[in-house]
Image 1 (cartoon, rainbow, N blue to C red):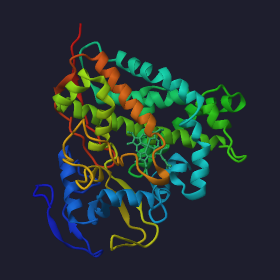
Image 2 (cartoon, protein in one colour):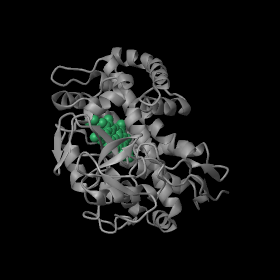
Image 3 (cartoon, helix red, strand yellow):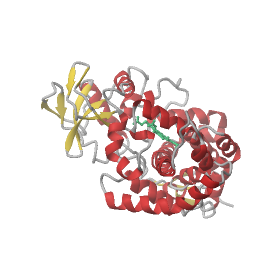
Image 4 (cartoon, helix red, strand yellow):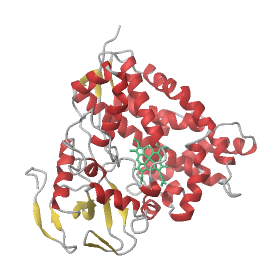
Amino acid sequence: MPDTDDTRLIGPCQHGVVVSALPDFGVDPLPGEAFHRACAAVRDLGPVVEVPYFGGTALMLTRYDDVVGAFRDNERFPAGAHYEIVIEPVQGRTFESMDGDEHNLYRQLAQPAFRSRAIERFDAGGLAATAHEVVDGFAEPGRAELMGEFCAVFPFWVISRKLGLPPASDECLRRWSFDLLGFLRDPEPAQRARDEFDEHLAPAIGERRREPTGDVLSALLHHEVDGRRLDDEEVVAHVRMFFAAGAATTYHALGNLLSVLLTRPEVLATAVAEPQRRPAIVEELLRFEPPLGALPRIATLDAEWQGVHIPAGSILLFGIAAANRDPAVHGRPDEFDVDREPVGLISFGSGPHFCPGSHLARRELLTGLDVLLERLPGLHLGDPTGIDPVSTTLRAPEAVHAAWDVG
Ligand code: HEM
């Protein structure tokens, strides 16, 4: 086990693994490399380790093969059971909280949001145009806090425009998404977000149900699979999910991208001088600092994993960031290496709930990078306060104070 200030061994526990007085993965901020050192410490302790989590404990998997295997084992560790508790009561029933045949059917019914002619039209020009429009709003003074000005705007506009929704203020789109995600911690704002969101969507849903216009929302309302269609409430629930699951994750990923670029001048110089290497930078970013650092699950059945008994009802933590830095898979895992051969990225999950937005997320990261570097020449870190990514499940910097040349 690495010798760090972040970890301390305290003895055996009921599951035959070792409990360590690691930081609490639910509440401690774990800035920058402190998080990755804690993950490495857990990985060295064993395949299944009981770690502090929101004042209780969770069983954490950190080794690449285990994390991939557990993601794919949707029988014993179904994704739906977790999302049914943490988000369905306010988001509504979507394929995120379903499993088995029902999950397959609803994922197909929602397919127009990921693959359709309207999506292709938007991707062809809408992404870059949207990024430019966001930058227009803050570029002039030569400095800005980019988490707020760019990361917290671009992905929310993308989802809204991609779907063909009526315009709403940046503040509303962002607040609705984050308040929905915060349901378990704070149900009241989540319920309010749901009500306001629904009021915003209702007229468009009614119009497109009567008269489809060729946009994604119309396609979602009219797409049929085996004679089934999503009803109005199901479409609204899935739209809520696209914001919560799609825009909030990309907000964090863009923040992590900026954090890496602005604290590693050599990576920034490569990105500026060699645009053809930007896709490799985005791929390495997703490995090195994934926005979902660890994902919770609930074991619905008694299970045995690597010889460790996992009782039904246990909370598991799938250590995505830890698996991405497993030395058994990646050489020099703690280095940001633009020339790394991309193998086995687990940042978008695996198995039946694999992220259907991974293609869009990569395009948003790349387009965001292209447009920021084109529009903000001489981009550099203005003030390091808040630049290290914090937290575990949704992880990003608190602030990116940047400056660039003007005039
Ligand atoms: C960098 C950004 C993103 C990351 C790292 C990410 C990561 C993930 C991961 C790890 C899962 C699996 C969750 C699980 O197994 O419990 C997932 C599921 C999902 N993602 Fe993403 N995602 C990103 C962006 C997006 C975008 C842009 C969308 C588009 C709307 C999206 C929509 C979804 C949906 C709907 C699911 C649920 C899939 C299912 O349950 O079948 N994600 N994402």
